[in-house]
Length: 88
Image 1 (cartoon, rainbow, N blue to C red):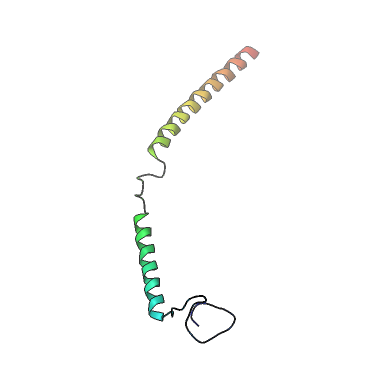
Image 2: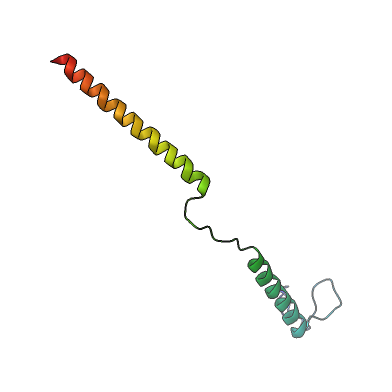
């Protein structure tokens, strides 16, 4: 029996509930069609690789955030100097 375990091996190559014989050539054809279909779908599903790791929109947002961080650091330093001057 090919591919189907029914518990009782009758020796014929039929699927349970069918009268058609399962041939090795039929299984080979189905396997080949499935493999070719999978390869075609996998080939079509690939996207173009981006130029950089970070997309351009995220880069501009990151640059803006770094600018804000620099301004906050400057403001903290000025505030720290003002506190130091007021304590003296």
